[in-house]
Length: 337
Ligand code: P6P
Image 1 (cartoon, helix red, strand yellow):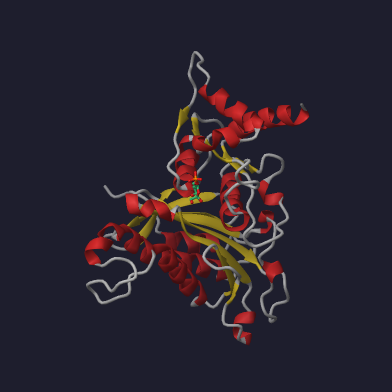
Image 2 (cartoon, rainbow, N blue to C red):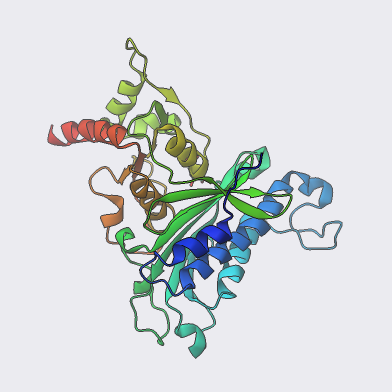
Protein backbone atom coordinates (compact mmCIF):
# COMPACT_ATOMS: atom_id res chain seq x y z
CA UNK A 1 0.00 0.00 0.00
CA UNK A 2 1.51 3.38 -1.00
CA UNK A 3 1.93 5.53 2.11
CA UNK A 4 0.06 8.81 1.92
CA UNK A 5 3.34 10.68 1.58
CA UNK A 6 3.29 14.40 0.97
CA UNK A 7 5.12 15.83 -2.03
CA UNK A 8 7.63 18.66 -1.59
CA UNK A 9 5.18 21.04 -3.25
CA UNK A 10 2.39 20.14 -0.80
CA UNK A 11 4.80 20.38 2.14
CA UNK A 12 5.95 23.86 1.08
CA UNK A 13 2.38 25.13 0.79
CA UNK A 14 1.42 23.66 4.17
CA UNK A 15 4.49 25.16 5.88
CA UNK A 16 4.83 28.51 4.16
CA UNK A 17 2.35 30.09 6.54
CA UNK A 18 4.59 29.09 9.45
CA UNK A 19 7.53 31.03 7.98
CA UNK A 20 7.90 34.49 9.59
CA UNK A 21 8.52 36.29 6.31
CA UNK A 22 5.98 34.20 4.53
CA UNK A 23 4.75 35.93 1.43
CA UNK A 24 5.32 32.76 -0.57
CA UNK A 25 8.69 34.07 -1.73
CA UNK A 26 10.77 31.60 0.22
CA UNK A 27 8.51 28.80 -1.00
CA UNK A 28 9.11 30.07 -4.51
CA UNK A 29 12.87 29.96 -3.84
CA UNK A 30 12.78 26.38 -2.61
CA UNK A 31 10.77 25.48 -5.70
CA UNK A 32 13.57 26.96 -7.80
CA UNK A 33 16.08 24.74 -5.99
CA UNK A 34 13.81 21.76 -6.64
CA UNK A 35 13.73 22.39 -10.38
CA UNK A 36 17.51 22.81 -10.66
CA UNK A 37 18.03 19.69 -8.52
CA UNK A 38 16.05 17.61 -11.01
CA UNK A 39 17.93 19.02 -14.01
CA UNK A 40 21.36 18.56 -12.43
CA UNK A 41 20.47 15.14 -11.02
CA UNK A 42 19.55 13.94 -14.49
CA UNK A 43 22.90 15.09 -15.88
CA UNK A 44 24.90 13.69 -12.94
CA UNK A 45 23.23 10.32 -13.25
CA UNK A 46 24.30 9.93 -16.88
CA UNK A 47 27.81 11.35 -16.35
CA UNK A 48 29.33 7.90 -16.65
CA UNK A 49 28.14 7.82 -20.23
CA UNK A 50 30.00 11.01 -21.16
CA UNK A 51 32.77 9.13 -22.93
CA UNK A 52 30.14 7.34 -24.96
CA UNK A 53 28.06 10.46 -25.57
CA UNK A 54 31.03 12.78 -26.20
CA UNK A 55 33.82 13.90 -23.92
CA UNK A 56 33.95 17.28 -22.24
CA UNK A 57 34.75 20.19 -24.49
CA UNK A 58 33.53 18.37 -27.59
CA UNK A 59 30.06 18.03 -29.05
CA UNK A 60 28.15 14.95 -27.93
CA UNK A 61 25.81 12.84 -30.08
CA UNK A 62 23.04 15.41 -29.48
CA UNK A 63 25.34 18.05 -30.94
CA UNK A 64 25.44 19.85 -27.55
CA UNK A 65 28.62 21.23 -26.06
CA UNK A 66 29.61 18.86 -23.24
CA UNK A 67 30.28 20.92 -20.12
CA UNK A 68 32.11 20.14 -16.93
CA UNK A 69 29.36 19.10 -14.56
CA UNK A 70 30.17 21.64 -11.88
CA UNK A 71 29.99 24.45 -14.46
CA UNK A 72 26.73 22.93 -15.72
CA UNK A 73 25.32 22.72 -12.17
CA UNK A 74 26.39 26.30 -11.47
CA UNK A 75 24.59 27.57 -14.57
CA UNK A 76 21.41 25.61 -13.87
CA UNK A 77 21.07 26.76 -10.25
CA UNK A 78 21.78 30.40 -11.17
CA UNK A 79 19.26 30.20 -14.03
CA UNK A 80 16.55 28.61 -11.84
CA UNK A 81 17.02 31.20 -9.08
CA UNK A 82 17.19 34.13 -11.50
CA UNK A 83 13.93 33.12 -13.15
CA UNK A 84 12.14 33.16 -9.80
CA UNK A 85 12.27 36.97 -9.59
CA UNK A 86 12.92 36.96 -5.83
CA UNK A 87 16.72 36.79 -5.66
CA UNK A 88 18.85 39.92 -6.07
CA UNK A 89 22.25 38.22 -5.94
CA UNK A 90 24.08 34.88 -5.94
CA UNK A 91 27.53 33.86 -4.70
CA UNK A 92 28.95 30.55 -5.89
CA UNK A 93 32.07 28.47 -5.40
CA UNK A 94 32.34 28.57 -9.20
CA UNK A 95 32.33 32.40 -9.37
CA UNK A 96 35.16 34.65 -8.19
CA UNK A 97 32.78 37.48 -7.27
CA UNK A 98 29.10 37.57 -6.38
CA UNK A 99 26.60 37.94 -9.22
CA UNK A 100 24.15 40.85 -9.11
CA UNK A 101 21.20 39.32 -10.94
CA UNK A 102 20.29 41.66 -13.80
CA UNK A 103 20.90 44.85 -11.89
CA UNK A 104 17.74 46.27 -13.43
CA UNK A 105 15.63 48.15 -10.91
CA UNK A 106 13.12 45.31 -10.80
CA UNK A 107 15.69 42.79 -9.61
CA UNK A 108 17.06 45.22 -7.02
CA UNK A 109 13.69 45.01 -5.28
CA UNK A 110 14.24 41.30 -4.63
CA UNK A 111 14.84 40.46 -0.99
CA UNK A 112 17.00 37.32 -0.94
CA UNK A 113 20.59 36.38 -1.67
CA UNK A 114 21.67 32.78 -2.24
CA UNK A 115 25.11 31.23 -1.76
CA UNK A 116 25.81 27.88 -3.41
CA UNK A 117 28.36 25.16 -3.84
CA UNK A 118 26.81 23.86 -7.07
CA UNK A 119 28.51 20.48 -7.09
CA UNK A 120 30.45 19.61 -3.97
CA UNK A 121 32.76 16.63 -4.32
CA UNK A 122 32.62 16.81 -8.13
CA UNK A 123 35.97 15.01 -8.42
CA UNK A 124 34.01 11.91 -7.35
CA UNK A 125 31.86 12.01 -10.47
CA UNK A 126 34.42 10.08 -12.55
CA UNK A 127 34.42 7.22 -10.03
CA UNK A 128 30.63 7.13 -9.60
CA UNK A 129 30.59 8.29 -5.98
CA UNK A 130 27.74 10.48 -4.66
CA UNK A 131 28.06 14.26 -4.93
CA UNK A 132 25.89 17.13 -3.74
CA UNK A 133 24.74 20.73 -4.08
CA UNK A 134 24.76 22.97 -0.99
CA UNK A 135 22.70 26.18 -0.67
CA UNK A 136 22.36 28.95 1.90
CA UNK A 137 19.71 31.69 1.83
CA UNK A 138 19.68 35.12 3.53
CA UNK A 139 17.50 38.19 3.41
CA UNK A 140 19.57 41.07 2.03
CA UNK A 141 20.68 43.77 4.52
CA UNK A 142 21.36 46.52 1.98
CA UNK A 143 18.36 48.76 1.16
CA UNK A 144 15.76 47.10 -1.08
CA UNK A 145 15.75 48.84 -4.43
CA UNK A 146 19.51 49.42 -4.39
CA UNK A 147 22.06 47.14 -6.10
CA UNK A 148 23.05 44.10 -4.02
CA UNK A 149 26.26 44.59 -2.01
CA UNK A 150 29.04 42.32 -0.72
CA UNK A 151 27.71 42.90 2.83
CA UNK A 152 24.54 41.03 1.84
CA UNK A 153 26.68 37.89 1.43
CA UNK A 154 29.09 38.41 4.33
CA UNK A 155 26.47 37.71 7.00
CA UNK A 156 27.05 35.29 9.92
CA UNK A 157 25.40 31.90 9.51
CA UNK A 158 22.95 32.63 12.34
CA UNK A 159 21.21 35.08 9.92
CA UNK A 160 20.32 32.34 7.42
CA UNK A 161 16.60 32.06 6.66
CA UNK A 162 16.98 28.69 4.92
CA UNK A 163 19.69 26.18 3.99
CA UNK A 164 19.96 22.71 2.59
CA UNK A 165 21.56 20.31 0.19
CA UNK A 166 20.75 18.05 -2.71
CA UNK A 167 22.48 14.66 -2.56
CA UNK A 168 22.84 12.87 -5.90
CA UNK A 169 23.28 9.36 -4.51
CA UNK A 170 21.50 6.05 -4.93
CA UNK A 171 18.54 8.40 -5.10
CA UNK A 172 18.33 12.18 -5.45
CA UNK A 173 17.25 13.85 -2.22
CA UNK A 174 16.62 17.42 -1.08
CA UNK A 175 17.22 18.03 2.65
CA UNK A 176 16.51 21.55 3.92
CA UNK A 177 15.50 23.73 6.85
CA UNK A 178 13.79 27.10 7.14
CA UNK A 179 14.55 27.23 10.87
CA UNK A 180 11.72 24.91 11.86
CA UNK A 181 13.44 21.50 11.82
CA UNK A 182 14.99 19.46 8.99
CA UNK A 183 13.05 17.46 6.42
CA UNK A 184 14.24 15.18 3.61
CA UNK A 185 12.52 14.59 0.26
CA UNK A 186 13.35 11.79 -2.16
CA UNK A 187 12.84 12.09 -5.91
CA UNK A 188 10.65 9.55 -7.65
CA UNK A 189 12.37 9.78 -11.06
CA UNK A 190 9.48 7.99 -12.74
CA UNK A 191 7.18 10.97 -12.20
CA UNK A 192 9.68 13.74 -11.33
CA UNK A 193 8.20 14.48 -7.89
CA UNK A 194 10.03 14.73 -4.55
CA UNK A 195 8.26 12.94 -1.67
CA UNK A 196 8.63 13.58 2.07
CA UNK A 197 10.70 10.49 2.93
CA UNK A 198 12.56 11.74 6.05
CA UNK A 199 10.31 13.99 8.17
CA UNK A 200 11.83 15.91 11.11
CA UNK A 201 15.34 14.45 10.88
CA UNK A 202 17.22 14.40 14.20
CA UNK A 203 20.99 13.95 14.69
CA UNK A 204 21.43 11.06 17.20
CA UNK A 205 23.06 12.59 20.28
CA UNK A 206 25.94 10.17 19.95
CA UNK A 207 27.15 7.89 17.21
CA UNK A 208 29.99 5.58 16.30
CA UNK A 209 31.06 6.99 12.94
CA UNK A 210 33.96 9.42 12.52
CA UNK A 211 34.63 10.96 9.10
CA UNK A 212 38.05 12.53 8.44
CA UNK A 213 40.82 12.26 5.85
CA UNK A 214 43.35 10.41 8.00
CA UNK A 215 45.92 10.85 5.24
CA UNK A 216 46.45 14.33 6.70
CA UNK A 217 46.68 13.03 10.30
CA UNK A 218 50.32 14.04 10.87
CA UNK A 219 49.42 17.68 10.06
CA UNK A 220 46.42 17.93 12.40
CA UNK A 221 46.34 19.96 15.64
CA UNK A 222 47.33 17.83 18.67
CA UNK A 223 43.83 17.89 20.19
CA UNK A 224 42.32 16.50 16.98
CA UNK A 225 45.02 13.81 16.81
CA UNK A 226 44.21 12.81 20.40
CA UNK A 227 40.50 12.62 19.55
CA UNK A 228 41.15 10.38 16.52
CA UNK A 229 43.29 8.06 18.69
CA UNK A 230 40.42 8.02 21.22
CA UNK A 231 38.08 6.89 18.43
CA UNK A 232 40.50 4.10 17.52
CA UNK A 233 41.23 2.98 21.09
CA UNK A 234 40.42 -0.67 21.79
CA UNK A 235 37.70 -0.70 24.46
CA UNK A 236 35.27 -3.33 25.60
CA UNK A 237 32.58 -1.93 23.34
CA UNK A 238 35.04 -0.79 20.58
CA UNK A 239 32.85 2.19 19.86
CA UNK A 240 33.86 3.64 16.50
CA UNK A 241 34.05 3.01 12.76
CA UNK A 242 35.71 5.23 10.11
CA UNK A 243 33.61 6.29 7.12
CA UNK A 244 34.88 9.00 4.72
CA UNK A 245 33.97 9.15 1.03
CA UNK A 246 35.43 12.54 0.12
CA UNK A 247 32.02 14.07 -0.48
CA UNK A 248 30.93 16.10 2.53
CA UNK A 249 27.22 16.14 1.65
CA UNK A 250 27.14 12.33 1.64
CA UNK A 251 29.30 11.95 4.76
CA UNK A 252 27.12 14.53 6.55
CA UNK A 253 23.87 12.92 5.36
CA UNK A 254 24.90 9.44 6.57
CA UNK A 255 26.14 10.81 9.91
CA UNK A 256 22.93 12.80 10.47
CA UNK A 257 20.80 9.69 9.92
CA UNK A 258 23.00 7.25 11.86
CA UNK A 259 24.99 9.43 14.29
CA UNK A 260 28.55 10.53 13.67
CA UNK A 261 31.07 13.34 13.40
CA UNK A 262 32.65 14.95 10.32
CA UNK A 263 36.02 16.65 10.74
CA UNK A 264 37.93 18.86 8.35
CA UNK A 265 40.63 20.38 10.60
CA UNK A 266 43.04 23.20 9.93
CA UNK A 267 46.54 21.84 9.54
CA UNK A 268 50.13 22.74 8.74
CA UNK A 269 49.28 22.30 5.05
CA UNK A 270 46.00 24.24 5.12
CA UNK A 271 46.08 26.95 7.78
CA UNK A 272 42.30 27.49 7.84
CA UNK A 273 41.26 24.06 6.65
CA UNK A 274 39.73 23.41 3.23
CA UNK A 275 35.99 23.99 3.53
CA UNK A 276 34.38 27.32 2.72
CA UNK A 277 32.48 29.08 5.47
CA UNK A 278 29.72 30.74 3.46
CA UNK A 279 28.43 28.06 1.12
CA UNK A 280 29.61 24.81 2.75
CA UNK A 281 30.02 25.18 6.53
CA UNK A 282 27.24 27.65 7.39
CA UNK A 283 24.42 25.80 5.58
CA UNK A 284 25.55 22.42 6.99
CA UNK A 285 25.85 23.99 10.46
CA UNK A 286 22.30 25.38 10.21
CA UNK A 287 21.00 21.91 9.29
CA UNK A 288 23.07 20.25 12.03
CA UNK A 289 21.77 22.59 14.76
CA UNK A 290 18.18 22.35 13.51
CA UNK A 291 18.53 18.55 13.75
CA UNK A 292 19.90 18.75 17.32
CA UNK A 293 23.58 18.45 16.36
CA UNK A 294 26.47 20.90 16.62
CA UNK A 295 29.04 22.60 14.35
CA UNK A 296 32.17 24.50 15.42
CA UNK A 297 35.55 25.57 14.05
CA UNK A 298 37.16 24.03 17.13
CA UNK A 299 36.81 27.27 19.09
CA UNK A 300 33.41 28.88 18.40
CA UNK A 301 30.04 28.05 16.88
CA UNK A 302 30.33 28.08 13.07
CA UNK A 303 27.20 30.22 12.73
CA UNK A 304 28.65 32.93 15.00
CA UNK A 305 31.72 33.51 12.79
CA UNK A 306 31.70 37.00 11.24
CA UNK A 307 32.72 36.43 7.61
CA UNK A 308 35.52 38.57 6.19
CA UNK A 309 35.55 37.39 2.56
CA UNK A 310 33.41 35.44 0.11
CA UNK A 311 35.57 32.31 -0.25
CA UNK A 312 36.88 32.25 3.32
CA UNK A 313 37.91 28.82 4.65
CA UNK A 314 37.42 27.60 8.23
CA UNK A 315 38.18 24.42 10.18
CA UNK A 316 34.92 22.42 10.38
CA UNK A 317 33.75 19.91 13.00
CA UNK A 318 30.11 18.90 12.77
CA UNK A 319 27.79 16.15 13.96
CA UNK A 320 26.32 14.39 17.00
CA UNK A 321 26.47 16.72 19.98
CA UNK A 322 28.13 14.29 22.44
CA UNK A 323 30.86 13.46 19.88
CA UNK A 324 31.54 17.18 19.32
CA UNK A 325 31.74 17.74 23.10
CA UNK A 326 34.28 14.90 23.44
CA UNK A 327 36.37 16.41 20.60
CA UNK A 328 36.18 19.84 22.27
CA UNK A 329 37.47 18.29 25.51
CA UNK A 330 40.61 17.07 23.72
CA UNK A 331 41.07 20.40 21.90
CA UNK A 332 40.71 22.49 25.10
CA UNK A 333 43.13 20.23 27.02
CA UNK A 334 45.76 20.82 24.30
CA UNK A 335 45.02 24.55 24.16
CA UNK A 336 45.46 24.84 27.94
CA UNK A 337 48.77 22.95 27.93
P1 P6P B 1 40.03 15.87 0.93
C1 P6P B 1 35.09 17.97 -1.74
O1 P6P B 1 36.11 18.60 -2.50
C2 P6P B 1 35.17 18.56 -0.33
O2 P6P B 1 34.94 19.93 -0.38
C3 P6P B 1 34.20 17.86 0.60
O3 P6P B 1 33.01 17.52 -0.02
C4 P6P B 1 34.98 16.64 1.05
O4 P6P B 1 34.57 16.14 2.31
C5 P6P B 1 36.41 17.19 1.13
O5 P6P B 1 36.47 18.29 0.21
C6 P6P B 1 37.43 16.17 0.72
O6 P6P B 1 38.70 16.78 0.83
O7 P6P B 1 41.14 16.84 1.20
O8 P6P B 1 39.82 14.91 2.09
O9 P6P B 1 40.12 15.16 -0.39
